[in-house]
Image (cartoon, rainbow, N blue to C red; front, side):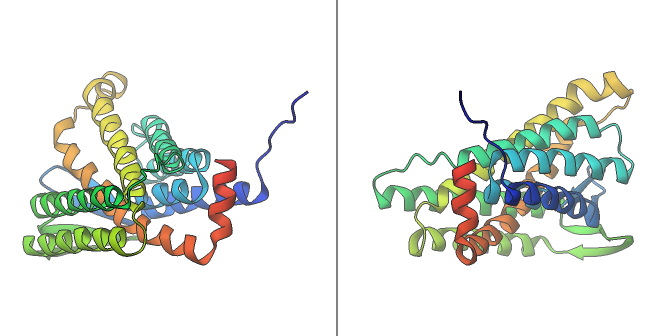
Length: 253
């Protein structure tokens, strides 16, 4: 007779807390993009962070349920069922991949891999930011909305800084950091593909709502990129400050 594995108190607490974090982060900060009539939010950062810190199951539950609750609160019930599935898949993919490191033998291979992914993240941030988040935007913080004008040059600078910082971490302190970045990119692209599929083939059939699915792809890529740039340094700081969190998550995940 095999003993049934149960979740630890830390895992239960983390699931509850991060479900709330995902919901709050999605609601509290959003940017309306007039060119696409879409919204950017930072909820992705908490989906990624929950998966990195506590594994695929916490990431899946927190990402799916927390994001779905945010859709319902914000008045987007037609997205809620898709969000539950898509964000759960996103959290699971990130948490699963980050715990299945292929462990390349050569540090040079890892450093090269990390630098290439750093350049990719930097390029995405510069390209999507300058194209879709520059000029006049509407920013909502909590219940306050105001207009900002962001120069496209700002996104080029931020993209270069992101590429440089990720590369620096890979070269100086953690050559395998690239696999963490890769895990987030794959999970984020799962989200992008999921929403594109839903908007292209399902939302019109279920709710008689017509959307331009292609126009939302860069918005979701930008959301993934900004979320990664928030989650990556946050996770690394928490791992360094509380190594027991990483050990327990690896044991359960």
